[in-house]
Image 1 (cartoon, rainbow, N blue to C red):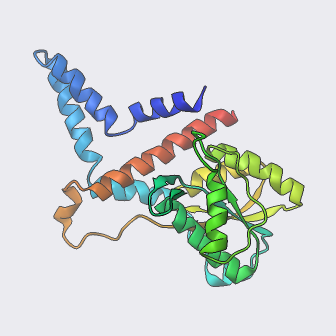
Image 2 (cartoon, rainbow, N blue to C red):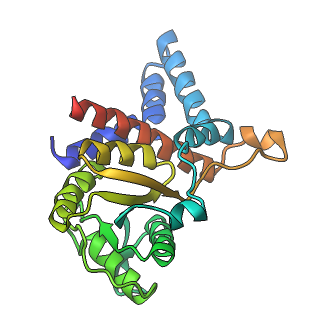
Length: 252
């Protein structure tokens, strides 16, 4: 199945499209009882996808791998730092071309910290799923060298998904004679990344960053009010769970 088809299927299954499709279908047959039930269910799901009461537990359920302590970092027995890509800002006018996304920059910043504490080489990973520009790993290499002053000798620039990140990284690491790595990605993405890399036979020490779950709101009422941050977190969590299920099927 092509990557484009997978993205279309995912878009239809994910909010807000899936609740909106229920609402639309319900409105088309609203004169029937089933239509009113479909429309009401769609509205309820759309609301649930936008409130912190739902989004925060969803994200927290994925962020089960704790951050590394300074002592763990300094005493690591890893041989390299793998940092996964996380999309790009295309045609950024201030950079006169593609640059790394905000999420990707957060990962690079943490990888730079790990490098300074351990001296381990950083290996950026990620290609370009739509093949419209330089690979994410190439952009990451440039940022590491120019902004963080970290020389970057090796990159993996062909993968398009987390699953491919792991497979292609395994080939590169085998060529380099590296068996154990620190793996940098978002805390909510770590379960899917760990599963992929373990399936590829790589010994991984999880180094999560950018924890998104938030403390309890001071005003409980805010948990029930829709907001853009909650909507984004719900989407991210459901995307990860859908990805984990898909990768589990691929591995069978």
